[in-house]
Length: 133
Picture 1 (cartoon, one colour):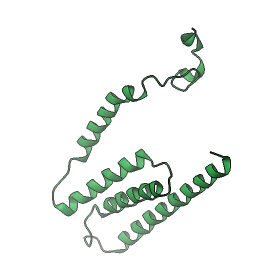
Picture 2 (picture 1 turned 120 degrees about the vertical axis):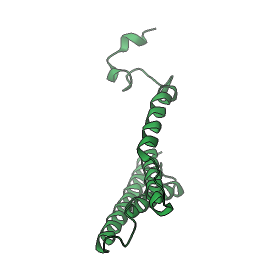
Picture 3 (picture 1 turned 90 degrees about the vertical axis):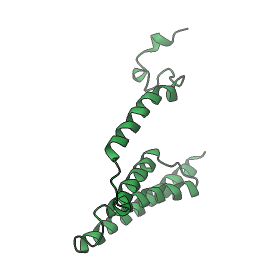
Picture 4 (picture 1 turned 30 degrees about the vertical axis):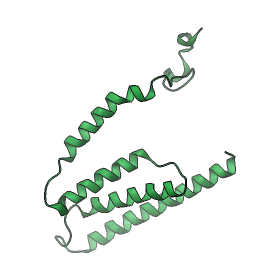
């Protein structure tokens, strides 16, 4: 991919992120304007989840790399926001701890055989003696 194409994708992604931040700030401002109790307490989480998932959907539609982190964060925020509307408590913290533990367990299998000489996983390139043939 040539440099101008990379720059255009970078600029487009930055534009989408700016729009998402703007939507988030407008949503927070509007929610603060209304009297307390007018909306359920976790409405901001619901809105944040929709904004983050929407951001990644737009990235995907334009052929940009989606962020796994913001996608997961959006899903968590959406679920946490929905629990107020559905009327029952969803145990978010235990679910996050389980997800974190599973990611630690699966992490080594996902990066197996991807260590190359001079890579970050290789002590920042200071362990060439381990790769001598």
